[in-house]
Length: 377
Ligand SMILES: Cc1ncc(COP(=O)(O)O)c(C=O)c1O
Image 1 (spheres, rainbow, N blue to C red):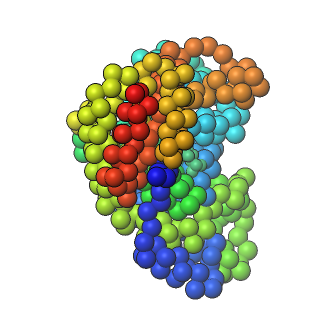
Image 2 (cartoon, rainbow, N blue to C red; image 1 turned 90 degrees about the vertical axis):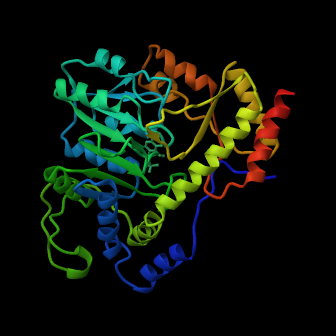
């Protein structure tokens, strides 16, 4: 069998949406699908404004610029994340300060965040891991408020997740989503910021398009529009946004399918009664969207790595999400980061993500479980 780590869900509606955008024969860059997609994101999340970008990374970069974070500032971030949670802090010449995580949802540990606050701290970026909601997100909001800090959610992996009835993306001052191909719905590459601040919304639009004050479609009017601040080309193409419109309309269905498959997988793995395999038991109030299906190999790195190799030989894709950012070559040897983050490093040694996607079959799930059993003999 060949079971990849993820498979993209697509259907005829996606094909039609993209081909309609192409067939217009114009506005492949800034086109009508951009605003339509932004309106749907803002409606889904319940935030006033959404601005789409060509990636989640550029969205987060733009957001830090919009908040005026820069040289001399510190931003508290998790090290247990994809590197794009902390790199944007460097892009704006500020300093990422790493805090440890809790073990239940692998979000930031609020106690450790408190310890990392200095007079230079301007913001906390909380990452929601693999489709979860960071369990301490409300406590993090409280800490941010008490210390006059911004709380930014890196919700790249958790579109649609909820804590009780509150959706990811609505806890912080602003939040970022990624629509890269591994996410719960996708535009190939892409990302978005959601916020309730009109000021940040206006700044994001300037940063996204060269600092150009646009009062209509730049490409179709041909009118001169002035450049009022420094900006980038972080725009999403209309073709991608058309795909986003079609994908977001079925996101609830895709999440339901992921949750159903995750439930089967949990049942199959639990049935193995393997002491060495830790299966997450997420808090009942958490509506998890299973962008990833993480397990942990309790005996540690060596065993985890051989399980990974074994599964790969059996045609099963896995991934280590995540190795700590502060231990990457770049952060450790080039930037000189050192220091220990106990829980981050422990979870990283044990973490292994198994395949999960809407169309994962029961046969595939049973095969994954069987091969894990075979590995342990
Ligand atoms: C936690 C996290 N942050 C940031 C990103 C960056 O998003 P993108 O790949 O769209 O730039 C990703 C996705 O890859 C991610 O998983």
